[in-house]
Length: 97
Image (cartoon, rainbow, N blue to C red):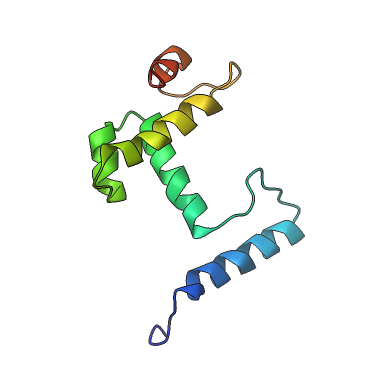
């Protein structure tokens, strides 16, 4: 079953899942949905839940902290007054400095 998996295999599975979801009436706010989308979501959710940036750096496999800091900026830009996360909007905005 797993003997001939390529780099395209996860993309094909994801594409099929997205197509099935759309047929079932599911809408997506992010497009396109790719394996990389999940990587970004994973990093942002870690930060949203209070995981220290050095731990996120390690989990993401980044050699330079600057590469991980990109996620803090994405996270901070996404905060709006009607959303609540474990990190307050004030704290998130401070990450941009």
